[in-house]
Length: 110
Length: 114
Image (cartoon, rainbow over all chains, first blue to last red):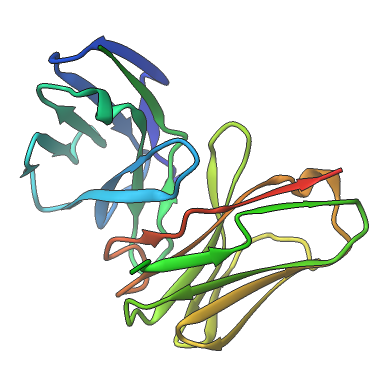
């Protein structure tokens, strides 16, 4: 299956700490995307990393991709209460659809 | 300005009824989608349209029928609603097909079938 699987399913940390979420997938991919979903809202795109890239940054976010291990990680540095949300990875292969994992629920405690 | 807007936000109805959800995007994207998110947060694609043409039709019951009157609109009509249809339905759009560009999501329609 192309579907990504996030790990852990839930993560609770103190404000100011770093949060790391992982995503594993089973088939080769074109790109991998990370999304955030706040409670009661739609998903918001964070970062897209292509299969020939190894790392991308956006503000406090850092995404790595290891195609040999078929895995990706999302690091949020210096977490804030507003980072509390569910985070999803999604993969695409060829001209096929974007397939989402079940997400990691991140809670930042003040 | 809301980029992807869908209505209604909440929909409560009884089994057997027919209902519609509307979606509009003002991003100028050619591709639009319907996703279903279940109670465990699992997000599954249902349909995708590119410039008004259906390009993805997952294993969805025939009771679900999408309609795209133009490339800025993608509506979802559901006949003979069942309890299992209760979920949050998200509309999304993207510049390219095939997951090669970011998706922009609406805020969802929470459908409750009683």
